[in-house]
Amino acid sequence: MNKCKWAFNSINEEHYHDTEWGVPVHDDRLLFEFLILEGAQAGLSWSTILNKREGYRAAFDNFDVAKVANYNESKINELLSNSGIIRNRLKINAAINNAQAFIKVQEEFGSFDNYIWRFVDGQPIQNAWRQHGELPASTNLSDVLSRDLKKRGFKFVGSVICYAHMQATGMVNDHTVDCFRYEEIRRLGES
Image 1 (cartoon, rainbow, N blue to C red):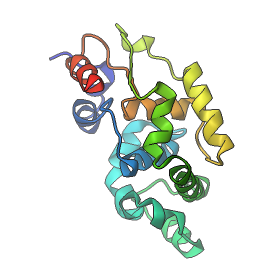
Image 2 (image 1 turned 135 degrees about the horizontal axis):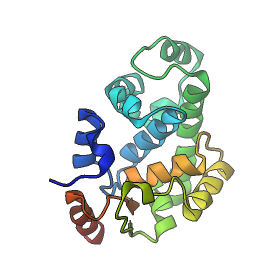
Image 3 (image 1 turned 60 degrees about the horizontal axis):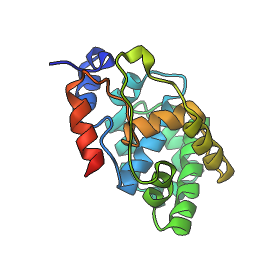
Image 4 (image 1 turned 90 degrees about the vertical axis):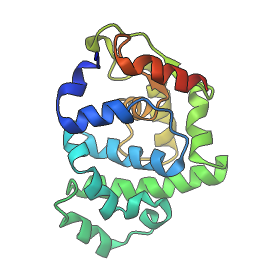
């Protein structure tokens, strides 16, 4: 069975590729989870983050945005001693800050889903890459999203992180055309 080249890097990456990557996400909790995980990845491999994903879910109250937005210094210190996550103060502080900014976006747009999907007019972008090497790290659209998120007070949302978030949440279909998931994801985007 043909798959995107990176899917064979590890068992976790293959499972993520086969079940999640590129599936359109419209659930605010999951959109928040990916936003925090993509920010945590900065400077690291996605495999590292996938290996710690369950640790993140436990440490961050299953990405309950209201709870994360209210974390205090005591909770930050607890997170800094938690080996189940990336123990980086800047990234932890950014997660809390982003939870607060996320709630403001929800209040303004009714949901984060309403906000973020308007960048692609509510429909996934269907790319047609033949080889993994063709995939961009960022695009003009991820630049626009990054600038808007930063304007709204989000941290760790550079263009590369935004593009990874777009890929993860199905705003773009970046499976290569020979991958068995390409057509499945394309159909999901049309429904």
